[in-house]
Image 1 (cartoon, rainbow, N blue to C red):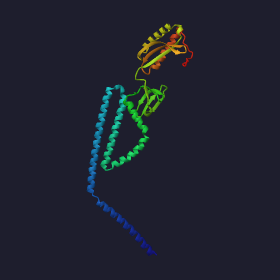
Image 2: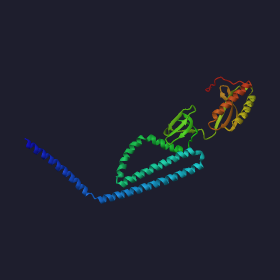
Image 3: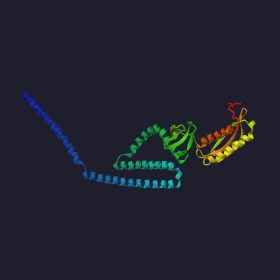
Image 4: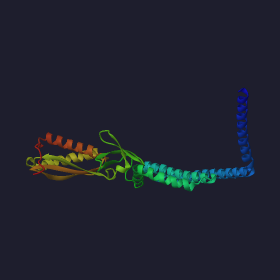
Amino acid sequence: MFLLTTQTVDSSDTTVVDQATEQLSAWQKYWQSIDWDHVFSIMIQKGLTLLAVLVLFYLIRKIGSFLINQSFERQKKKVANNATRIETIHALSLNIFSYTLFFFFLYSILDTIGIPVGSLLAGAGIAGIAIGLGAQGFTNDIITGFFIIMEQQIDVGDYIRLTDLQIEGTVTSVGIRMLQMKSADGTVHFIPNRNITTISNLSRAHMQVKVDVRIQPDEGYDKISSLIDETNQKLAADFKDEIFDGPTLFGMVDLGNSNYAIRTILYVTNGKQYKVKEEFLTAYVKILHENNFTIPNNPISLGQ
C-alpha cells in the first residue's frame, strides 16, 4: 500500500516537471528566434521619427501662435473700442489652431508607431455621429456665437432687446457659447446663443424721446407752449452731454376722446432716454402747476 502511494506521487511530480521543462523550452526557442538586431533597429528608427515629429510640431505650434498673437495685437491697436470682441475672436482662433494641430500630431504619432489609423477613424466616425447628434445644441451655440461676434452685432455695454425671448437689458458678456445680460431690475440672464434669433440693439444710434404732457387748450395754449419752450431751453443746457438733437417743441397732439397733450421731441444718448424723459416730464408738470394750469387726469379711452 505504501509502495503504491510513493510510486503515484513520483509519477505526478515527474509529469509536472516535464510540462514545466517543455514550456521553458518553448519560451527559450521563441526568445532565441527573435531577431534582436532588427528589433533594436526598428526601435531606434521609430524613436528618431517620433523625436522629429515632436520637434516639428513644437516649432509649428510656436510659430503659429506667434503669428496669430501678433496679428491680433495689431488689430487691438487699430480698433481700441472693440477690445472685447477682438479678445474673444483671438481666443477662438488660438483654440481652433491648437485643436487642429493636436489632431494632426496624434495622427502622425499613431501612424509612426504602426497603429492602423484608418480603422480607428472609421470607428471614430460612427461614434462621432452619435456624439454629434447629442451635441447638436452645443454646436449651434458655437456657430451662432461665432457669427454674432464676427458680425459685431452686439458689444459689452450695449443695451439690447431679445424680441423672441422678451428680455432686455445691458450686455455684460459675449461668449462663443452663451450671452450674459443684466436687466434693469438687476436680474442676470444666461442665454445660450442658439436661442437668440432677433437682436434689437438700442445702443447703436441715438434714441428718440417723446415727452407728452396733457393740457387744457382752452386755458391758453400760447402761454402753455411758451412755458414748455422755456423749460426745454433750460433743460437742454443741463443735459447737453446727453442730448444730440432738440429738444424740439412739436406742438399739440390729439390723444383721442377729446384729450390733448403738448409734445416735445429730442434725441439722446442710448440708455439715457428714460432718465431724460422723466426729468422733462417732471419739469413740465411743475411749471404748469406753478402757473395754475390744469393737467387732466381723466382716463383716456383709446378705443374711441
